[in-house]
Image 1: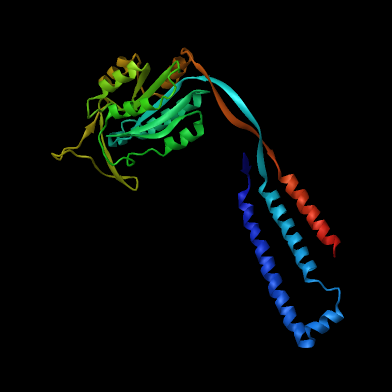
Image 2: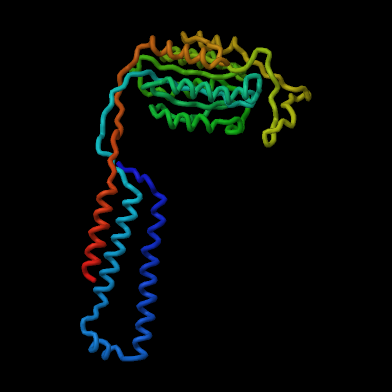
Length: 328
């Protein structure tokens, strides 16, 4: 396993072909000039020690020294320790609602951005739990399989938006069904789904999916984003509101948080519903929840130490350059 720290220095390798092209151009020019004064036979007689091979060998050594110097600047690093780390944790799949209703601004700056910040804050509190991410609207799509890589999780999380799925509406059942497939460890003591949504459900099959999860020993904890009073769904261009989403009768759609649906889904699996608008309350709830749960030990292999290797290339460059200079 290796890393290249300063890859932009590779651009300096262009010096090598430039030197060789220049060498052949100058050699050709010198040969043409010499032929005007004497024939090749006479030149060989006058300069018996002249050697094309020696000149090209010196140029080759000089090119190698440049190559080594460039690699020294790039600073390659090699992973020198492969360590097996034993961890204890639970498996959590975050299911994030990316339907158009999540653009409502009854929580600042809007429901979806609030959800992203909430999940990111939860990730900051996790230590060794494995996590996955599912995005859903009228259908669900996997975003991140079960992993301990929280950095990648945050990257995928920030990429979520309401335009990533062409079919609109909210199918909580699809989110739950897909999240269930993420758990590939039947021996895991605790497997959790954190379902984050405004609770609008247009397909009404979520309770069946929740029952399926419960039968598999998976608990669902739901977090409601938005307000019961509701808010319109803005249609923006370049960040400016042009209008609001309307129904087939031309009336502005008011999307409201449905706590009843979210509460029932959680209760079916033995989980709990939690108001999600207050980040601090949610963090406190999640930390206590995970602290009280049984955790399973699992192994994770990773490279834990990288050592610089630029010294070898720098020494090589110096030796090659010195040997080249000694031949002068």
